[in-house]
Amino acid sequence: MVTPAMALFLVFYVAAVVFGIALSFFRWNGLEPRRFVGFENYKQLFVDDPVFFTNVKVTLIVVGACLICILPLALLLAVCLSGRGRLLPLFRWILFLPVVIPLAATALLWAEIFNPAGGVANEFLGVFGIGEVTWLGDKNAALWALILVSVWSILGLHVVIQLSALSAIPTELKEAARLETPSVWKIFRHVVFPLLRDSLTVSAALVITGSFVFFTSLAFIMTRGGPVHSTEVLGLRAYLEGFAGLNFGRACAITVITMLMTIVLVGTTLLIGSRRRVEY
View (cartoon, helix red, strand yellow):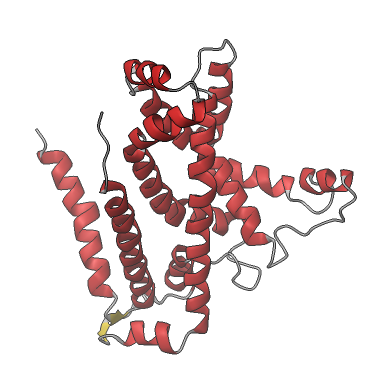
């Protein structure tokens, strides 16, 4: 019964990964025969290409910023929305709505919001007497503008994950904790929060992998990696190398490095999350 799914997985995932790793040792423009160059593609990236380190830096900033913003916000909103009020389902739906909006529509919507000529963002800043900001044309603002869009787009998913984890905590534990202390903060700190370790670990892993994929598409649509490579993450750089520069060997080398970075970051997250697991 699993044979068709396994065949698709082997062909479109495992074989593609193996082919990409092998192609990173070749020079190929997609038309001429492939030429083996060994580690030359990697050498050019690490030794002869200063922009590559900018791409790595931007990628790490995106991952770190998304983790710092999404995990605390998702946990806070999940706690606030875990009650039984009449309007809480509406708020949950509103929070989850950006997750189901197509990526292209999200990019176009926020491009209009960040439009320096009459966009909502600058109109809002004008209320506080702040001058106009060229959100997507300023290298100091473009990256943070796209990070804001990323957080807005995927926050709802992680709120749902934390809501599910909160609903799975037995009510008896909370009631027993209330007999020991009336402090809501102590109950959350010593009973609820430790039981959310697994769900927070899952969210962190999803944020890391999602940042690599989602931000690449978002940056391509909204800024094309500019200005001055300030929003050019590794995934976008790989795309530009392959399909704009017709250097598929170097593009595959970048994707291999990206894959290794993802494995290290997710592996570290899972290792930290598996320590001191709490059960009551």
